[in-house]
Amino acid sequence: MDRFFRFKENGTSYKRETIAGVTTFLSMAYILFVNPDLLSATGMDIGAVFVATALAAAIGTLIMGLVANYPIALAPGMGLNAFFAFSVVIGMGIDWQIALFGVFVSGIIFIIITLSGIREIIINAIPAELKYAAGAGIGLFIAFIGLKSAGIVVPYEATAVTLGDMTASTTLLAIFGLVVTVIFMVRGVKGGIFYGMILTAIAGIIVGLIDMPQQIVSSVPSLAPTFGQAFTYIGEVGWGQVLTIQLLVVILTFLFVDFFDTAGTLYAVANQAGFVKDNKLPRANRALLADSSATSIGAILGTSTTTAYIESSSGVAAGGRTGFTSVVTAGLFLIALFFSPLLTVVTPQVTAPALIIVGILMASSLGLIDWKRFEIAVPAFLTVVAMPLTYSIAHGIALGFIFYPITMIVKGKGKEVHPIMYVLFVIFVLFFAFLH
Image (cartoon, rainbow, N blue to C red; front, side, top):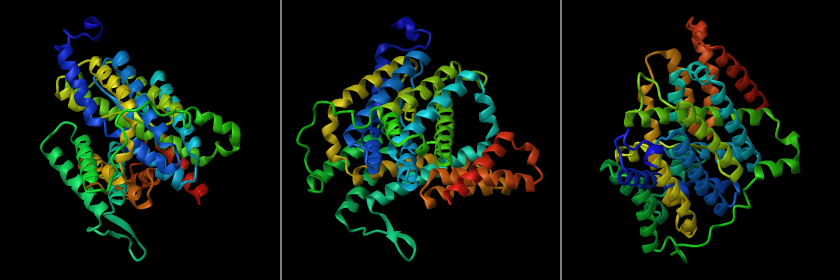
């Protein structure tokens, strides 16, 4: 084991790696409850999604640890789960089973891209500013969902949205959770989001807004309501319901966000751990293969796109340097399967603070955009602002990718635009045409 994970070479030990694995798990354990809460809005069985979330995280993280030997954990990605639920299923009216098939296909394409070596071509084709804008826009979209779940933002006919009743008991509970979580985060507490959810749930139980769970540990819920539905459902409705321009855009969006989110996360965490040499990441293809495989596996199990988590940096900060950290984290996700009764105490008011905090963290990429270049500012701004205002990540990405070639051509820089961007321009124009 020592030789397999290269403990001596990386200057680490079993104890340090174990502590790092536990730290990473606590930092991202909130996804076990937030993901089922979001996906259940589509009609998916919340217990099955809980199991799919834990298994996808465990399997993906285990592959990352054993194949790539990196202390990086994976789980269903924030933003992508919101896109799956609110944009694809609820917004576009695509059945969740077909949406799962879209996730599966995006994972297969990701695997092909990784194995074929065209990863660099795609990375270089899309300008950095649009990648940053997509990340920030997703952050605002997630935060908006969180504010809505908390009751802080509510629908209003005259102005579309307005401030909710700040004296409502459920809203006050969410505000309490937000304040507590912010305190944890500002103080640099590892797992602050998870601890914030725990304290919010306890506070809700104390004041009578949340029922006390009947039990803490139970048998694992059935995975049957979601397992394999990405394929069995297609047999029932036929391929005519699947092969649409809408699903093509959905697949491209899943692929785009997962691809660049993973690449950015891998580089950031690996750089923190000191793995990056000469601006290159060793075993990058293995790490990307672990991520893409986890996405397809997760879709089969019954969850949205599985991706690398930036929270892995907390484990690296605790000393994690090898894949054994990931093995420990994967083991804890498997143990978590027996704690499904806690889903009953994780109400929208409990998860809302987590969504808002994650949104804040993702919005930080706004500072990386060169706003002084108007030809860049226009597509970047439209990408960012359209996501929360249209309640769709796909619409934001589509608008940005349509306007980028236009502004660059008008600026006289059309030759600097990669041909792939022109292809995407046509696809997204067709998307809006067919959507109409």
